[in-house]
Image (cartoon, rainbow over all chains, first blue to last red; front, side, top):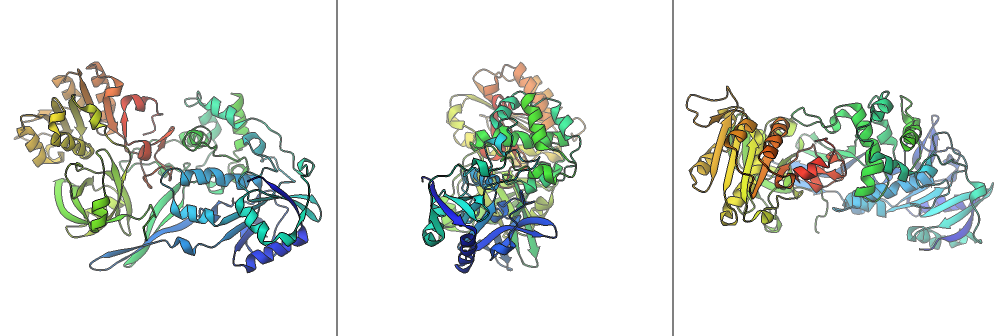
Length: 338
Length: 279
């Protein structure tokens, strides 16, 4: 649909949050607790941390929880009864205060889970998620969205994008049908406006390279020693994948208690040696440098072929989370100029 | 309500257990739900996820041929958590099965050709499906040659079927064991598969080679085939990367631009050469 422009006062946003929670929707927003800002369930605007550049973890767990039941079973002496997940019981969720990079992260994630054999569980959660993002007025040295086709005021992936244009007012762009449904039910909170140039209200993130250039360069870099060099410090902890809004790799495990149990899927990472280890002991990616190479190739070379999407949105979370201080933007820049 | 949860397995009953070799068993599995049995269809080369509830899932090929209706079979070696749990089960027990997944051996395209099957050790099971599929449609193919090697005589799987193939006038079977793996009664060959392959030197003329075995066997077998004049398009194999989902989502079998589970497991040598060697 064509984007509809409105204004939303902060007091009206406050009322909107209360109405959404009261209507039975679960509203998640960045909340600061013990010095750390992450997405948490809220029912009032007062608890939102509007100042954080990005939350430590992305919002992906709203559709792809860290650990999630995919079936349950019960064994009797004669039989095994398997119970499906009740996807109709999933709550309606509103993610509020996601950044444009977070919102963009749902696009490659959706492509992974819904290309061929659509994943019904993921799909059901995504269908019930409405994303109200807030444009970035601040960025830090880890942000590189503009180098991977994003920008601090990008609407892609959001259902509504709010851009703070004054201390009391947001410029609201209604981007999708889901966004329109929220607007339609709360028209009294929005005001009319003509289109507004968001640029003066957005953070500046300098473009250092392009995703297309990385993609191009990778065609000849598979055997390069750049992977050894860049991953020398990598400790293989997998934090980069866990905080990444676009990483969708998972493991499947059973948890048994007596005669019953659940089968769950949980986040996994191509940075772990166990990820590809065969039972025979053979490991196709036995060195950390091969696993680092896989991470970059998957996001910038393979995903564009497999799912027609880049697997990176430039949020910089992996660099912020890395205990060895590997900076993906610097490494990508090095690849781009190689 | 139709179950669209792609992670929920079919319920299968173990109908028959065959001890093939030390720590290697074959299960014949039947669908417990008649509707599932009717709906289910697979083609040779495809695989599935077999589960023991409480232990997890394990990936193996469907070792029976699609021409043998009413059941599927799998052959596995006790190696990890799930295969150990499977090995503890017996006839009448229930397991889960998801599948079929992956691509197929293009046997329709092999019509009118000679077939050369080369397998090593526990890699005969994926080959057994395509061998029986082709033998059940025997008139479609010219010469059928099977070269199968294992570490020792005890490690040869499907011993009764090897005998059947040996006795068939329309199959040339060569069996071999690694040096030191022979018994006094052994009347097959002694030597590694690639060595025996150069000895028997089958013609590459109008022939498709299907190779499956441990990485080391594969590595030394391809050059022999190339020397015999086989082109990369006429050499097929089936890859086995670690998998969880089986349909290209969990990410772990990803090699280059393909997923072994979704785009494979069957690849020609030509296709393999276009992939990074991460298998």
